[in-house]
Amino acid sequence: MSVKLIKICMLILSVSLLYSVKGFAQVNNFPALSEYKVVIQGDSGKWDANKTHTLSVVEANKDGYKYWGYYGLSYYGGNPALRKAGLVRSNDLVHWDKYEGNPIISGDCRWPNAIYVNSTFYLFYAEYNENNDSHIVMLSSKDGIRFDNKVIVVPTELGVQNQNPFIYYNKQDGTFYLTYYHGVERSNDKPLVGRQGINKKTKYVQKIKNYWQIRIVKSKTLENLKSAAPKTLLTSGYTIASPSISFYNNKYYLLVESIQEGKWDNKWVTLAYESNKIDGKYKILNNNPVLPDDEACAFQYVFDNQLYIFYSHCLDLVNWNWELRMVKAVK
Image 1 (tube, one colour):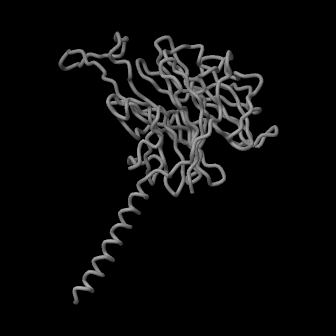
Image 2 (cartoon, one colour):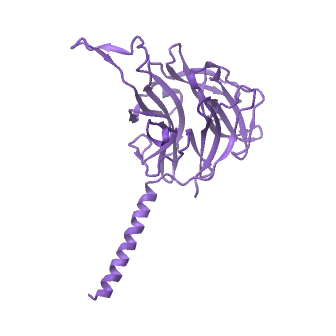
Image 3 (tube, helix red, strand yellow):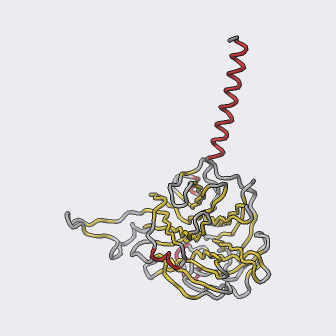
């Protein structure tokens, strides 16, 4: 083989390897995202001023609006006055009209997350007890405004948080999946009864350390989620919470919020994972964090084959002021 031919072959091989590496990197990335649009802000002097934080969207095609959204407020310091939910409606996912009777849930409601099934709205959110432990409830409504029939789906555990629900119907297997944050994040506080135990063999006190988990339960019906056994998708020694799931590009994407001292400029970020099975093993993607600038609480949805992400951007960490933004995947 001539030297010239060898050089040509080496060049072809190098180009092939370059494109293979580039293609591999793209496969292991979360989709590129558009420029953001601010979609909801709190009204000055009103119940939601500077505190809009989460937005859950369903396609209802009802009362002149294609999309119905349920938004919750930021909850810094555990202020019970901020545990409320409001209704907004839209026809383009950008411009939203607030329901004049807001808030539609006026107390002990954090992280409202909705699904629309057989002309019925179902709303999931977290409630709290006097120790600030949380559990997850489900309510239903025919008009999307007045909710009742409350059922506890994920029960209270002493000293433990069960919150940040995200309800998802998986068309691939005809099953409902509820993901949520489960963990202990107050282990350095004054111990509560039940937060520590006695080892029967050694008689020593066993203290519980902080941990954060993303869990999932599944059922063919919403009503039976309450009896489903949880499975842990992720476990961390630093904050991971606020899970949401979508099926896009023939894979499942899991988004979680995170913050870690000494990392990401000490900002809140959103991390992305992928899996070929909705309740299988999730691997972290290369282009994290996908939302890097004090951006958290991301809820993702696919409408008309387009992936949308509604998330919270912090305007002022000292006063815990946020606004709701939207980005979408760039095709």
